[in-house]
Length: 255
View 1 (spheres, one colour):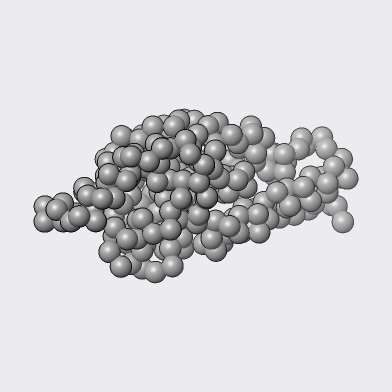
View 2 (cartoon, rainbow, N blue to C red):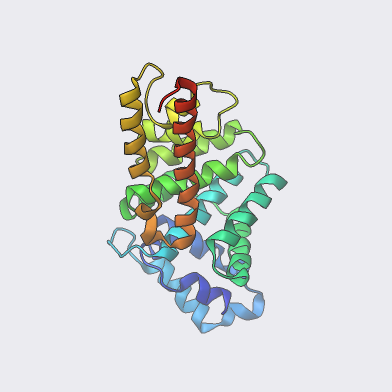
C-alpha cells in the first residue's frame, strides 16, 4: 500500500479544517520530484485544500490516529528539542497504534514531516473537540502526557502546550489533573487522591464511590470506536485508576 493510500484511506473529519490543511502542507515531503506529477497526488492535494472544515463528518478510527500524530508533533517540538527518549516512546506507541510495521513506519515518516510544519494547537484541538467524543479525547491527552514524560519529567514547554491542548479539547480541570497525577507519584504524596478526583479528607465510602465513577469513566470500552490499538492504550489508564485505589486502600487499611 502506498503512503498516499494509507493517509487517505477511510478518513472523515480530518479531511477538512486545520488538520486537513496541515496534512496537505506536508504531503509534498513524502514524495520525490517524480511523484509530484502523480495525478492522484494532485487530485488529493486539491481535495485537502478545497474541503469545508466546518461540515460535520463521520469520525473514523483513521481520524483519531491522524489527530494523535498531529498533536504528538505539537508536543515533541514544544521545547525546541526532540529527545531520543521521546522518539523511542513514539516508536513504541506507533507499533501499538498501527496494525502493521509498514503502517507504523509510514506514520513515523509523516510525524517527522509534521515536526517541520506550522501547526496551530488551538485550532487543531478545537477541531478534534468538535468531532471526537469526550472519552477518546481523554485518551488522546493521556497519550500526549505519556510521550512527554518518556524521559521521566515534563518539560515546561511541553507542559504549556499540553495545557493548551487540554483546554481546547474541552477537558475539565479535574480530569486533566487526574491524568497528570499518574506521572507525578514521586513529587505528589496525594497523587492517588488526585487520580480519583477526590481530597485526602474523603471518607472511605467517598473513596469507593470515586473509584467506581472513575473506573466507569476510563473503561477501555468507552473508546472502542477509536480502534483496538487506542483501546489498548486506554487500558493503561484504567490500570492506573486501580493502582491509585489499591494504594489508598492499603494506606487506610480499607477492606
